[in-house]
Length: 458
Image (cartoon, rainbow, N blue to C red; front, side, top):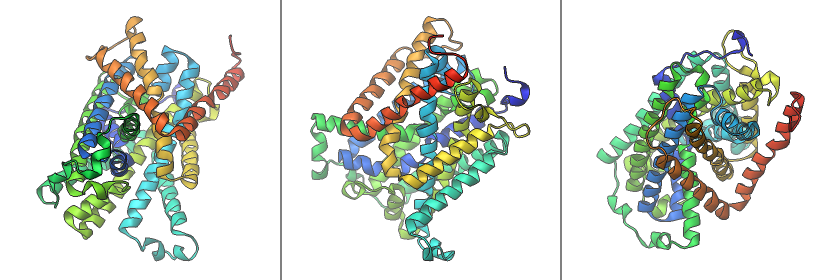
C-alpha cells in the first residue's frame, strides 16, 4: 500500500472538474473536422444530424461512466474500471493506448492546431525572430508546438490546484469564445440559411449504399473524436472531493453543455460558408469568421481559437499522467512513473513521459495523418467499460444507479461498434495500425507481470 507521500489528494470540487471536462472535450476537433465531414457527406443536414447523434452517444457514455466513477472513485478512468471488472490485462491495454494515443496524440494535435492557427493570424511571426533564415515554416510551426507542450507540462508539474486555477480561466475564455462566435455570427455576421439546402454538391450523400454508410461511419468517428473527453472526470477520481456526487454531475453537465454548443457552432459554420467551399477546409473556424465578419475579424478570431486550444492541451496534460500513475502503482508499468512529487503532489515523472511522447508525435506527423488513427483507437475500450456497468449491476457493486439503464448503454455500445466497423472498411490502414498498437501492449503487460513475480496463470 502506498504511503501518504505517494498518494494523490482530494482537492477538486464540481466547478473545476466540470471545467476540466469541458476543456477536454472542446478542442482541435470542433475547429478542424467539420470541413472534412462536409467533404465526406456533401450534405449539411446529414452532417448536423450526425453531430446530434454524436452528442447523444457521448451523453449515454457519460451516464455509464458516471456510475462507474461513483463505484471506483480512483485515478485511471477506464483502465481502473476494466481492470477491476474484467481483467488487468484488458485494463492495461486501455492504459497503453491512453499513453500512446489517448492523451499524447491529442496533446500533439492541439499543439499543432495552436501553431497553425497562430501562424495563420501572424504569417510574418517566424521572420520576427529571423528563424526564416535557418529553418522551414513547417519546422518552425513544429518547434512552436513543442514549446507550448513544454510550457504547460512545467506549469502542471507545480501542482493540481495551480493547474486547476489556470484551467478554470482558460476554459471560461474558451466557452466565452465559442458562445460569442455563435451569438455574433447569427446576430451580426453575413451568411445564408439557404446553405442548408441540398444542392447538386450533396446528391451523392443521399445514396445510402455501403459506400455512403462507410462515409457516415468515418464521419461519426471524427465527430466522436471531437466529443472525446466526455469521460475525463474519471481519470482524476483520486483527486475529486465527494466523488460519488461530483463525477456523475460533472460528466453530464459538461457533455450536455458541449453538445448544445457544438450543434449551434456547426450551424453557424453552415450559415457562414457555402457547402462547396466548406468541403475539405481544415481551419473551418477561421474561414467562417472571415466570411461572416471580414478578413480582419477572421484573423482576430483565428488568433483567439489558437489560444482556446491551450485549454484543451492543458486538460489533456492534467489527465493523462493519472492513468500512467495508476498503472505503475499497480505494478504494470515502470515503478518510477508512479512517483508523486513530495511538495506539489503530482505524478511528475508520468508528466515528463507523456510530454516526451507528444513531442515525438509532433515531429513525426500532422493532425490530418493522426486523426483517423486517434479516432479508431479512442473508440475501442470505452465500449468495454460501458459493458462493465452490466457486470456492476449484476454483482451488486453499483454505488449510484443512474437512469437510462440499460437502453442508454445498449445505444452507446451498438452505435460505437457500428462506427468502428464502418470506419475500418473506410480507413483499413489507419484502423489496423490502431488495433496493432493496442495488441502490442499484450507482451508488455506480461513482462511487467513477470517482473512482479506473478507468472501467467498464477
